[in-house]
Length: 221
Ligand code: DER
Image (cartoon, rainbow, N blue to C red; front, top):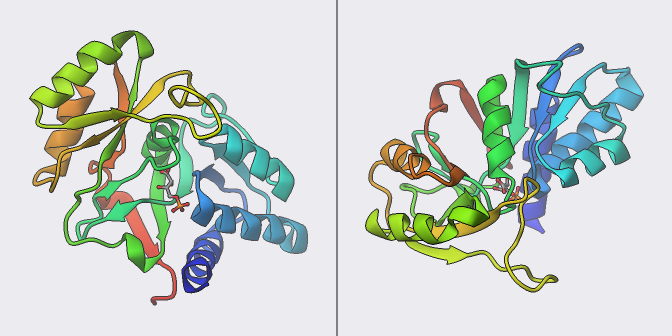
């Protein structure tokens, strides 16, 4: 499958950027898992010494499988590098993330990192962001947040479980709402506007860290 091959290529290239002694943010999703697999290999074959900060329960479990030792932001509030995937990336490196409902911790980890390495296949590249925006919402506040999102021009839809009846519950115990706004003319402005709504914990627009972002597109040099 050429998409899987591209994801693997991007993941491996990101993992090869990691240097001995680094503290590495570990994102969530199928592409970054290829980077983690490669890091596990480097730990075994080169004796690479790193510590990882996981952005989800799933990533923490994968890290254990791959033999990547973990740490926390308490012990390491600044990370050398964070590796993560994305759902859409525009030419200015503004992104939409959150397909995996991990975007709240992912943004915390990306923010803590000196460099943010995003690994994608070319299908994620867009000329302008227009995907529905994943938003993590305090369950108590769902009704008022949904109303405010509509006032912002959004169409909020609760993310329902597939093998669980009722809403998806994030690793942080909150709801996830997917909110379509159509073409997003001002990603940074919308990111901030959504985060100003009381009861919103975070959203999947990543528009405020483009300066430290490197995008690796699998299969393309
Ligand atoms: O949910 C997320 O933010 C993931 O990073 C997602 O955006 C990318 O997942 P993928 O690498 O499996 O496409």
